[in-house]
Length: 377
Image 1 (cartoon, rainbow, N blue to C red):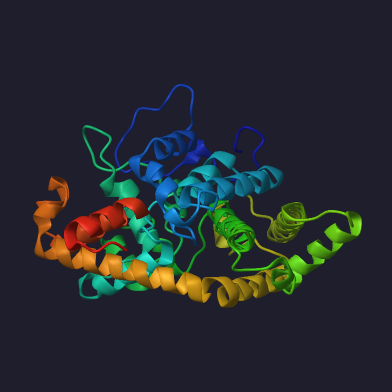
Image 2: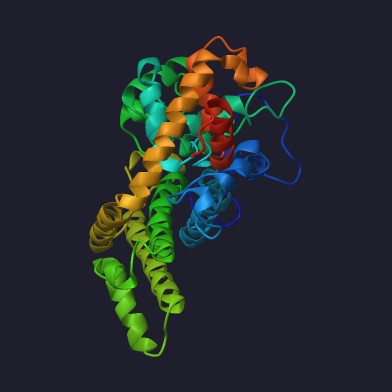
């Protein structure tokens, strides 16, 4: 039975599958707490503060970044984990690390880097997040990476194409990629973090979209999920105006989604009755929305894609970002000496270039692009 009041189906740090390299246990922290602390103190985590979520970093000081997004995911995930008696420390560690592999300029940077790497294994940010914690962080004297636990590493690898999973499985038999080959879900804590990620970005992209002026309150109120909370807010506070109406509507929407996940997941757990974390995995995905909330959340996601992510102003800036990444890749590939020595001397040149660019912040990438090409984007 897990300690600290955890449910029997929660991930128990005392039963971890361990680290890739042996480590002496800490006297005051369990394995998942140490994972969280290692992530927070990593270089890659600090860089998230200057990496794009939707709006480029230089477009405004108040828009979400990858760092603030990761913190919001961790807060939501921990709140739900506590209610479900899941392991909060593991949930938080996965949430804080899930975007460590993101490129500068958000998904535009990832798409451009994937195109550049098409003949060399491609690029995918979930795989890159695992590379960051397994190889690219250099904090310890006797091994690369952060040497995180299996459970945290598995949760970080949210998606993995089958071809990549098979390559990872060859290097680490029975490891974090095995579940993609078997078609099995990860731990409940990883499932929860995935859903908290979705809840967080839908909510904060509404906020940032309205703040930017690309979405109006009246426009976003057409999305059914948001509309119901906008209506109750204006009904309860008829004199309320401006950002207070938006903030309260988002707050109510977030709360409703959290309570819905708790209720739907509790019902799924009661029906499956898993007696351990392993039994919970074998029961299939159990962390979920109710049917109605899942449909409304999907509709909101479609709304944001059509009206915000594909807004001409966003598309224009992301097109420029793609060009920056493509041109940086071409320069570094031809002139590896322009990278830091630990990248410039690697034999796998294309992957080294991809690792170097993926680790950049938005502003560093722009400075490097201007330095190397003479073009100011």
